[in-house]
Image 1 (tube, each protein chain N blue to C red):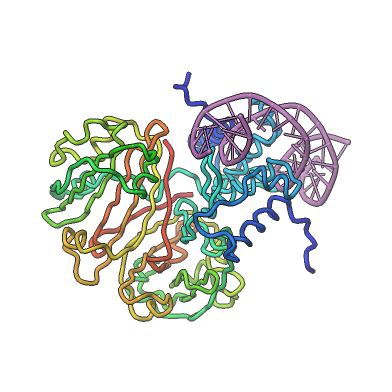
Image 2 (cartoon, helix red, strand yellow):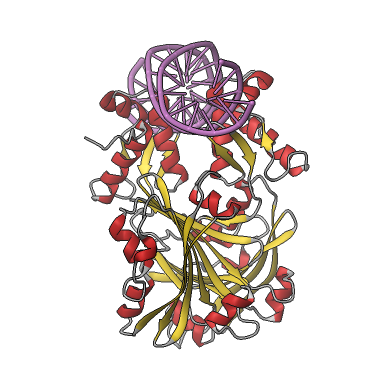
Length: 238
Length: 238
DNA sequence: AAGTGGTCTAGACCACTGC
DNA sequence: CAGTGGTCTAGACCACTTT
């Protein structure tokens, strides 16, 4: 029994295939059920089965050959190349000291950009806004400019962000269901440059991240990192 | 022979939309015809129109809002780090023209950095080196500075990289088994800046990528992208 | 001949937005 | 309310590969 989700059938089919691949049941190069087999087994129309397999092919999970069949692709979809990280945990994992400096914690009227990212309608009067600098051994490593949907975290302004990162706080009050991020190289404005103590021409790595909870955007964050002291790592195994 | 392939209807619809965007007829943010309008105009079924618009949305060309309409998206170049797709395919999926300009193709003695990334011992006398500029509609989008293990691709220097990207070439000669990448924001040197036509203070997004084949590092690539025209997108669902 | 994927149709119901 | 996109069905024809 699912909680009033109404998950589309083709998504359920994709999940079924992914589960069998993740569990190791279907290995790389092996054949997966044909469209007709999925139709019989799950009582769906062929168009629905076709869409599920076609989208998994476009994602690189499956390979299809007309007249032959559908096969598990070379790269197992196990790893996320850009992982969701908690900056504080990241720093502590390196054996270093993390410190958070809250600069701003307020309720604001969102501009058009924030509204569109959070998917809040124009009648939404306010969202929460926090700006926090994260230090690794007293060297600034991240400026976290975050906007939070008050429907998801109504008590956000009362939290103590010297003890808990916004990420940790949000993970407690709302289950994380979906993440989208965009990574760019930018020259930030003077304020961010000052907080990060950037050298004159030093660029910043900007991660824009939207997290979703219960099918609703919960938070929109702009994460600025000094180009000379920060990198994102990722990888895949076949 | 010029393949007299029957172009699928949904591909024709995608081309029609892309043509109108390319020509400037439909600008960023403007509304495009609804599915029903396409059905009437082109005498196709709604599923066919739906597929065309849906795939263009997945490529980032269009943005759709249920109950409102379909709109031309931001034309910023985006890559999906989840799939290791090559730059040429990314560009073609956006309906744009890809062109590769090989600048350098040579055999070199690797320096310490390249040796360590490729895991070749000091006695390795040489590796292959290529430097290629990739253009999207004649605008430079990537400088690909690549070092290749000659044990994996002994005929690398003989390939025609105006017709095939190094990625595509390597995928043919060696099965991809593992990928590692590091993403950074940098101020590249004058040579790279010139090739990418970067503005004075514009930073670059650098992806360092090592690919492995048969438990051996096959290739080490430095991929430079203009900060103002390129972004990495990613995400996952729980 | 049987099975596969690639494409396409002509309907349908739903939730949502704007008027 | 009419319009939009999101999903789904139960058929269909085709080109192709394998047996």
